[in-house]
Amino acid sequence: MLRSPLLPALLIPLCALAAAQATPDSPAAGMATPRDAQVQRGEVLYLQVCAICRGDHRQGLFGPALGGPDFLATFGGGQVAALHTVIATTMPEDRPGSLSAQEVLDVTAYLLDASDLPHPDGVLDAPVDGAAP
Image 1 (cartoon, one colour):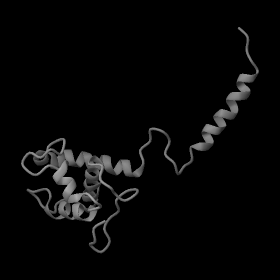
Image 2 (tube, one colour):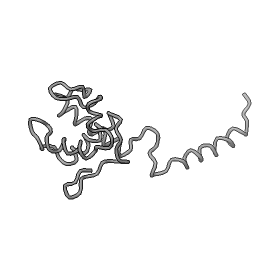
Image 3 (cartoon, rainbow, N blue to C red):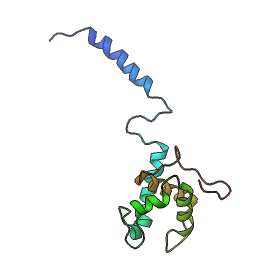
């Protein structure tokens, strides 16, 4: 078997180039961004707390669906603050207002993401002075 001296000469610069493109500020392939982590936390909380009334797929069981045309008509068009307020003040229905501020933000991020609604870049931050995000 013949070995080419060109192969190592080509591989070394390619490896260096690949390493240079992965910076600390950009997540490597397969790594979650902070926004992805927030959406994932929101999904877990949704399945634990909300799905009993709203369904595993947000289809609505004992309450309105959290997806589809009615949901999009109500909360589409950048209504992040309105969605956040509804979750913070009325959910879960058996314990309104019992979610922490971070839990409300996480569930809001999940619902925006799952419904392909517009949302702020990055993670949703805690409201300032009672104002919704």
